[in-house]
Image (cartoon, rainbow, N blue to C red; front, top):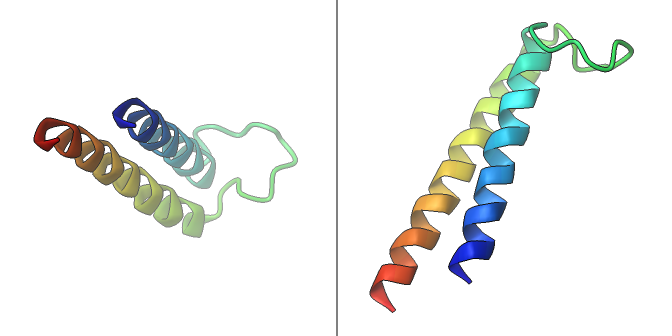
Length: 66
């Protein structure tokens, strides 16, 4: 169960970083994406990345207890 939580958290962090990159125009792929240069996607990406870190930490701590 710990591995699944950790992988999900890691995917959330990676997706959040992609959203931050697209929202800030540092990662303009695909060129027709509606997310490019839209600052709100930087915010949502940061929220998703932090949530992914929380999922990873919780899944690691739950494994240590049980």
